[in-house]
Image (cartoon, rainbow, N blue to C red; front, side, top):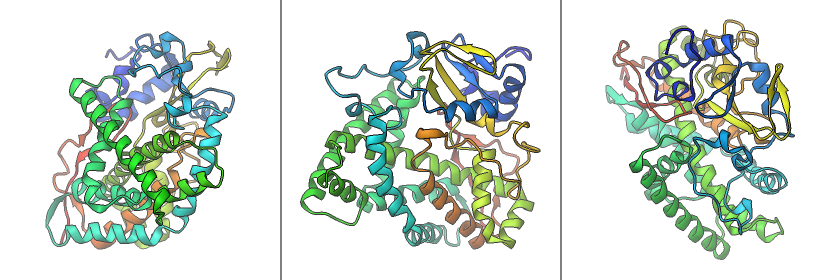
Amino acid sequence: MADDALPTILQLTPLDEDYRRDPATVLAKLRSACPVHHDAFSGATFVSRYSDVRGVATDLTLWRDPLLADPESRRLQRFDPPDPSLPRSETSSILTLDDPDHARIRGPLSRALYARVARFRPEVERIVDEALDRIGTQAEVDLMDLFCVPIPIDVIASILGVPHDQLEAFRDWSEGLIQGLNPFRNAEQTAHMERSSLALTAYFTEALADRRAHPRDDLISDMVRLQGEGAPLSDTELRINLTALLVGGNLTTTDLIGNGARLLMLNPSEKAKLMADPGLASALVEEVLRFDPPVDATSRIASRDLEISGCPIAKTRSVNLLLRGANRDPEAFENPDVFDITRKKVPHMSFGGGAHICIGAPLARLEAQVALPRLFGRYPGLALADPEAEPAWRKLPFFRGLETLTVRTGA
């Protein structure tokens, strides 16, 4: 890309080497040169300034369903058209539903989930300690493999009531389904996505029937009970949204913990602050989410002709919100490229906003608030095995996480 050229969507994903290595610099150039940028390649409009991203994300009048976008804006989307005879709520999760279906489904699901999260800290602590025990006295380990990956799987599985011996399969299915958000997926990734979808459909179909006959202390039983008490939810809607919760809760929280661990190893002064005051755990997690979040972008569909910072946006245009760009906007954050866990709090945009703010945010925060202080409490000398090595970032578009994170424990 020439220095004065605006990046296309391909250059705003980790498929591009420059973006994979340093997305903040790429996004800073875009935010400065053209904060509301129409990308001719994808047909979408990209918004990267904090005030614009926040304004669009919290505008309850805009649409979320990508099927409502004009054909030009959907140029890169890859999905089979849903059966028009089925309700939209039985072909999509709340991630891309609009009201009234979005509110009807999200309401009971969020109440049941948040009630469990509110009393789940002891279980998260147990799961984190088990992961630390597996590391034990090993001198060098892949932290992703032994710590960052298994914790979110174990946590969401415990909430859902998934047997422990199925956790690896669930991780594989989660990785497969997330390819549905990858417009550049290849044939092998598409096949993985389709296998995973069939497997999870079968699992949750059986689980819903089992909990109806034999209730347990888990979220699936909660949802079946609410359904029995009159919540207007079909089994198909429950299955789709429990699947979405599983997928969203695994990959992104894994990356939140992994990115956070790496940042603390790269910033010893911030690690020292945390070790001196464990009460900074919440502030630490918010700064990780701001500085190096797991998710790059979300989107809205213009429900009417509108303007964003004076730029006209036609009705049905897809508007992509560059969350990572907003989180480094110097107009919103002082010294935005400095990782500072005691910075003056300004709400980051990493969970989106408005009615579609991430439903799993409280659980992700809890897991990271427990995992990161306990990790460095157990291994205060934890360090990158090779500080000069290029990080092994995954190439999944619109997400940022490490494939591996090799560390010396100091044990």
